[in-house]
Length: 348
Image (cartoon, rainbow, N blue to C red):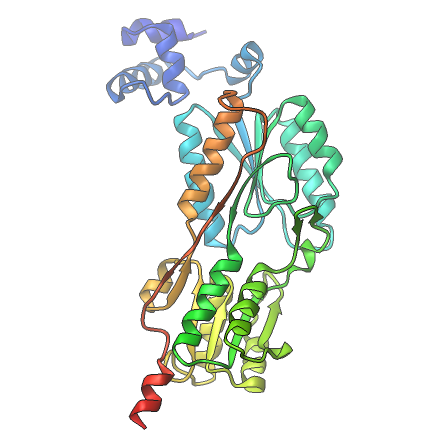
């Protein structure tokens, strides 16, 4: 049986260097890694990860629970986290929650699955506070935990985005261009209604930001101007119906998936952007720049980097036990999807 000693001898490096190379240690030069991997291939060597984990009481695995695998937002975040953790010698085990009526049970199943897989830590977007007992058990077991994008458990680390400010900025931008009849399209947050913790009474932050901007300008807010759309289904018909009902001059799309459906709905109705309807969307994904859509850009890469760093710091015990809560601010990227109604009025 080929061992790491055999690989070290052929590659002319130490046994510890072989181990560090297979952990993707950032302090190992690419030249040494190549020597180790070439020797391993030549000898047919595969590292025994199970034996290693039993020896150091760590699996080298971090669990990641995604909430929407169809959303490029989460795809980008997961790639960033995986890359950062890999450089520190950890592997990522990914599972996901679907949007359905069994959110609490599904989240509990995924948390327990990762624990049973001996994950050293778990990064997740919480969907309920009803799994508090599981979270407490994991903390006592020494499993590091990081919440991403939503705060449900104040006692564990979190990385959040100020969505209220993002919606406020988007609404202000449209108001400054003369728009008053603005349709806000957001996701149906009923699945998060039980997230009620002290200091974090959950309401849709994008709706709150929208209302704040409108109220500052003294613009009346009709109930029909705020629409929550079901997740993971084509919402074009619902959007078309609401457009025909209130005839907005502008739309704010709360996610890139909603923006996609809204753009299709406008096109199918014969409306052009921005000549007939202006648009601002969340998430500066590729098609936003391609279609020249003004966006509320969320620091997606930074979310992943901070979540990964928080996890590594916990595992390495590099900071006090008190939880770290980080809230990141979005920025508005102005393009050519917003028509200036003041300018058009001056022309007339």
